[in-house]
Image (cartoon, rainbow, N blue to C red):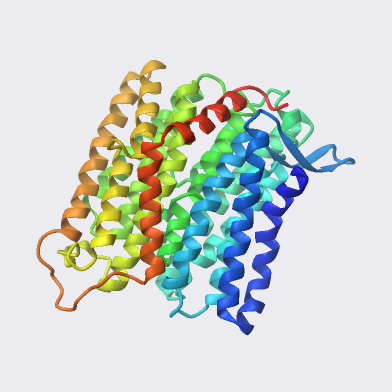
Length: 477
């Protein structure tokens, strides 16, 4: 099969296939679930098939539109790396959903939106021009809105509306930046834009969009509120899809395409540092399990922005490795939270305790993935965090480096706090809790094992990441 066809299958099989799921679900729910997984696995398999080509430094283009002199889709090592991470975690989340969502209403809509969400992510990842980036960006906002308000309660719907309004406002700001770039470059094609000078005003508008989607201070408040969504949805939002869209577009535009002015290599780390500390502080005092993990996501996104924005190869490598390791471990934390919530019927950690006795597998998996987020060796998160902070030191960002070191210490404190309160001590509920369904627990264990293996066999993901960095640190060809 031709490589350009692999790109199209990666994007359009889940996007178009998602629209068929409600009709399949009316005939057979089991068949619908199977097709939902197949559509996501198609993206994963096709992206893996593209890996041998792009890892050699080659690129693949698809859908060239002659009148507009513009490519619609494009695969390089950065795109394929992000596609594999997102579709891998997405596939595991879909499998988890089989056990989690089966007793709720609106299941047909759930699978439609989840698969559409993942397909739109593939669209953004493989987009070669600003127009298709924007279109798929907005589709993810619509899917996110429906999924956050999945339970239909008034409070939940209001929080979904909040997320939609903040992210769409950011997208409109980003669109203004795109139009400014078009006015300068005369094209929306990234290959053409790479040869042009982009104004700082355009960068500012685009950063509004990126920060809103990646829940970075001060546009972060919608993400903790999104914890009202089903746990597999919050895993999608936090792990490797929604909030990672922003950091991916940052890498695509401001590392692989446009060279930022030096001022941005200071401004963005400062914003990221403030966001990381404020959110870590919030995680220390909150008592809602999913909100704590959400604040942790906001904090860890700051580390990714630090790595990508300081402008050296070590930092970019650390930032990309962080996307992978954080995606695996944070998905597991949210999926574990789903098991805990269904078992205890609460998200308040002060009403939990002693769950390691009734949920030992979930507890161990939670601890392993917490270690990865903390940056404890030999978990994969250690290497990512080390590279990011080391790169900041080497680039002369000494104060920012210490800020993030302090943020790393806070990460250890608030995640240990959660583990001790939730899993240790004596049970605080009369009813007996138990592990979730086999598929739910197996999904969490799989992510925990991958987080561990990602650190033990760090050379393999590191090799892919370094090849990606060497390719994208230059201008797109």
